[in-house]
Every structure is written in C-alpha cells, then in structure tokens.
Length: 263
Image (cartoon, rainbow, N blue to C red; front, side, top):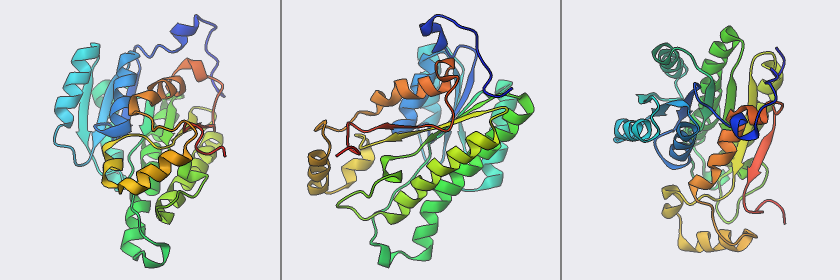
C-alpha cells in the first residue's frame, strides 16, 4: 500500500517502536551509537552492524539490558555487496523480521582535489555511496517481500554546501549522492517502503578531534548557534523518521545543523 496509513492515535504512541526490529550500520560508535540507543529507548530491538569496533558486542549487550529489548552486534563491510546482503538477511532471520534500516556508515578524508589518487577517491565512494546503496538494497529486498519497511540514510550538510577550510570533494560528492539516492528510492519503493535522509551539521564526535584546532574554531564561527551538537541531540529525529509520527513523509532530507547552512 502506498505510504500505509496508520490509525489516528495519541501522539506519544505514534513515536513508540515497541515490537519493531531495526538495523543500524556503523551502529557501535558516534552518531550510529546514539541512534542505536534511541531506537532501543523507543522500544525497538536493534542489530548494530560494525566493521572495526572491538567493543560492539559489549555495547549491544548494554543497550539490550538497559532498555529491556533484544540487541546484538554483527560484523560486515558495507562496501562489499554480498557481505552486507548476507548479514542483513541473517539479522532478519535471527530477529524474525526487519522493519527499519538506518544507513549510517561513513568515512571522510581531506585531500585537495588535484591530489586525489583513484584509490583514495574510490575508498570514500565505496563506503559512503556504494555501501549506502548496498545496505538499503539488502533491506529493500526484505521490505518488498514483507510489503512494508523504512530506510533512513545519514547524509550530511556537505551534500548541499562546500565545507571550508577543509578540502573534501570526495566526501561532499558522496553525501550529495546519498541524498539523491534516497529521493530515487523513495519513489521507486513507495508501494512498500518509506525512505528519508537526516543531514547533520558539525557533531561533536571523536572524528572531529583529529582536525586542527584552527579548523574547528572556523567552523564554530560559521555556525549561528556557536556550538556543535552532541550526537544525542539527533536521537529524536531518527525516532521520528522511524516511527508512525512521520507516516506521510518520504523522500525528505532533514537538516539539523544549528543554522549552519542558512547564512
């Protein structure tokens, strides 16, 4: 059914994810970790997909016990189509179904455009764009068979602006591709799946600590809010997109950036 219409209900109940099963790629750190926690707090069982974490199993156990839901960690490289397909299928088998796919894995690099090697360029695209598609595709196949589902991409404000002073043409291009991909899938899959994007601005994760202080000072100067967001400040947006509270929303791109993209 096109954008299946839920019954009118108490607004707080519309945000309830009890009984849902969610997958979060890159779900063991940064934004993905807070998304995993948020979905569990809203009542969903959660499968965290990770690639390099040494603590994913412990994190999943903590999320499950704290929120009295089922949670587990699965290792997969989203850049390998067959690998992410197999893991998503396994999750659906283990949990009995799949309702929500949060496509969150991503990497960044800061290289002048004229200096990119083909390997450096491809590495970004394989994870951020190819991996995003493969993850959504794996879930989409399940959703088509079920007749229902929900995909949420983590994009970026970098999809719509050029960051400064860092040089990151590959990252920006990959995230612009993710936003357009989400729009395409929202139309192609409208009979059985909603697809939306969340585009964060500067979020205070461990990744930002690796950048020069001068860059971070410049970013703060360019953000009207004059601060970066903490990852947990995105939790409500992901629950909104994952729940019946956004039942008529598909193909949207929610920008959460403290006003960074406005001036």
